[in-house]
Image 1 (cartoon, helix red, strand yellow):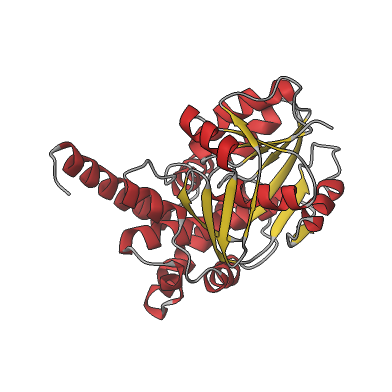
Image 2: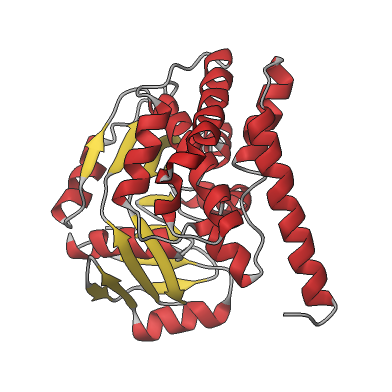
Length: 304
């Protein structure tokens, strides 16, 4: 059997690889840097924290010559289009786990069987081959409305590996719901340099409600009804991953590009196109971009 290819062996890729390896499948990591590929192939991946384990895998900067049984897109959202362009020729089925809707939409554009995935685990990257699980949640899988692929067999593989998995209908509506949670948790935690529990603070409730309502209105204007109340869903995720440091906070602290454009910026862009107001999302977008710019300027000038 051809391996399962994971494009992006960061926090989410490292976690999902553990489930696949525990289920007895061959994992192949596709990464950008040769040094990471060499280390993964030599030392494997370590998972610590609330879930513990390690597994062997092969890794390279290109997909394997024999192709992939499935290609999982777990890169940053802004890297997803390139990953999908690399994955599409070697796999008939794509499973997107990147934040936001960009990866899912791009996968549909390349005319491959597409499964949308959502990760509710809290995971922190500790290095090229080490991730730490700080919150245990679910993996949600569902096919696109335009796709005929059945996500149930892949979900069962992940369950055999110890994952908590649910197969849902109308994955687009769940992706918008998770976008609401990301649009709240990621920028707020990044701006105040705090773990996810800060979102539960009563003083922030008006902001949480404003961002969530804007995402709900934009989704509705796009023809999508959210499957749950976005505020309740976000607070539940924040509680379940209360000790996790969001990916946006980690990126900001490490001097990496954040996904603010692909999360809140996506909401603002679609809202503008559809004539919907998104002031709270726009404010968080501008604030985070300002902090990014300030930190980049400090690094260029030699400041800490």
